[in-house]
Amino acid sequence: MAGIKVIRRLLGLLDVNADDITDGQVLAWDDANSEFIAADASAGGSGAPTNATYITQTHHASLSDEQALEDLATGIVKNTTTTGVLSIAAEGTDYYGPSGTDVAVADGGTGASNASGARTNLGLVIGTDVEAHDSDLTTIAGLSPTNDDVLQRKAGAWTNRTIAQLLTDLGLGSLYQAKDTTLDTYAGIDPSANVQSVLSAADYAAIRTLLGLVIGTNVQAYDADLTTYAGISPSANVQSLLGAADYAAIRTLLGLVIGTNVQAQDTELAAIAGLTSAADRLPYFTGSGTASLATFTSAGRALVDDADAAAQRTTLGVYSTTEVATELADQKRVVEILVSDPLGSAITTGDGKAVFRVPTLLNGHNLVSVGASVTTVSSSGIPTVQLRRQRLTNATTQSAADMLSTKLTIDASEFDSKDATAAAVIDTSNDDVQTGDQINIDVDVAGTGTKGLLVSMTFEAP
Image (cartoon, rainbow, N blue to C red; front, side):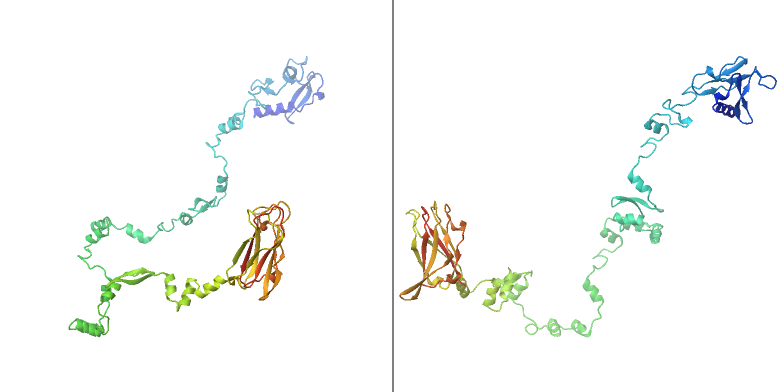
């Protein structure tokens, strides 16, 4: 307790106001109030004795022995045990100062000046003494497992699973043997030498030999017929068969008299019977008493089962002769007329530069498209053509009609009408042709230097 008193008194020095002490006074400890008070050192009688050791702020001539604070350097005052002598405490020896000597672990510090050294001194090295932070461990720490649960990574996250759940997830549910009291019973059986021989046999055949059950030697091989026979109680008819005098009698009893009830043996039938049937196959004879199989596809069957030739044509998707002739009559026909010689002179304007007579094959057809081309282009001007139909009104008279409501043109410097700015338009009121009609090629505009004019007309039955 003496040390506590000394500390308390030293702390009391800090509370003394120097302005409250006058010359000749000293600090005296008031134990009742736990504080230092100023006292007159020179006073007699009840005053403090002058030969005692006092702690003073400055030296005083009246005192024979005192510890003046003015003699000490600036710092923390330290009391020396047993002597009571005051001195200035040394940093690093008597106390730890900021940014000074590292505070030892024993003194409540870390003994280091950095975090890594502190962790080492405290036995908290990450990866050696403690686990580094990990989000997976945080997740695992947050789980609430029950007894016998196991930790499992499932669907990208950690979770606790029961043994049954884990086996299902691993696909081992059907392979895992659950606890079974019957198996406990088996585990308690001490197998005899014979049982051990059976259990260690190389294969089923060896087991059958050990058991004296060799099929064909010791026991009858399984046969479905024998099983069937064993379950039969023979009827009166069967008993009659078994008691028949000969094969003929048996056939008669069975209603299988050859030539009467059943077909007699025949080489052709035997040849067919000897074939191995298969899908899409048809038997046929390859010679006398021999047969084979031909491919008979669903397409072939579809044709054979048709009622008549018309149905077969429908199945095959073909036309009759009459239908073909009709179809041919309905086809489009193209007529092309060379109006001028490609190597000759340039074309000139004029009606009837070329004429085409409509044959019987085109009778009743309609003009459905037109076109034109040249071998030498026009350097200026747009070659323009009209198709004029001349039709007999009687044997000596004709009527004329233009077949194009917009004439056929070839733009300057171009070879074909398909690139023309204005496309030709057929006049549908004058597009039909009859046998004997004359189609005249009228050149309304020749262009400049144009050669080799070719006009194309396409006709189609309505």
